[in-house]
Image (cartoon, rainbow, N blue to C red):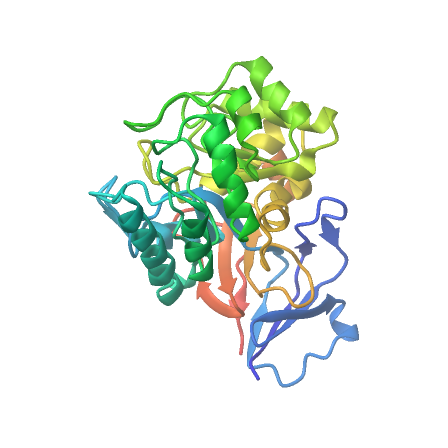
Length: 387
């Protein structure tokens, strides 16, 4: 049995909006799953195969990017860039969810090709995890001609998500709602493009179509890139039980409007984060951390709660076994501290002032995947593997 012990933790961020900071200075994981946490003196830390001395830094569940557009391996043709997933790991992200492999050159739009590519994409990221990052891929963009059996075939093959509704030929709410219903019946989760068009072939998706379609996630509610008018964003927040996905590549003002509206409605637990990259804005290795800092500082959200937008909320909305400090959940963590010379009395206070923390280590399935980040500002303190 592999046993990971992380000791001398300064703060344990839980990922849970209702209780964002757990008491404790130590966490134990067995065979890549969280076992227990609390005060080290109360825990069995003997026979550890890996011991990390956190040196007082904070530990949080690994961040989740709810909205990426991967293609194959750790390469994106949209920006002709290699190792973008590894760079994102250096921003604390340990899990990614595809919103469609739409940038694949020659992406097939016929039904046979569409299904084949979705299943292949699911398989190649299941079999190959760049730098250990978990990429939930194989997200087909719905097209006219799909029938219920097609969704069953894909679900039976392991496909769990639909790509953004609206990026294909299906652009009316009635047809989209029927297909989303078929997908849901067979255990597939759905996301809809929200706002103005982002790529040739896509179009405006307004609040009426979002509500008529009834997807599980309102993809980039703050636009990707162009946001809906304020009244439509407020309308979606008021009337939808879906996840409100805020993305780095969207409209920052609309992001803050969404946060303020969700808070007023008591719906902050529905807020999740993505980057919507790689896309025209490029690759954003620090995109989730930047959104946490921006929403905390401009949205007046305590930083410990804002971190939940980037891990626990997404885990709950997406039905994942990551993103929360919970027994039996994957031992996926990011260890981080206040950046050197950044203002604020602590890492969380610094984030509340809009500053990025420094990432000192990422762990996936109980295995150290990266140490001092090459992308974040340098942290004041760094965790260290001692065994």
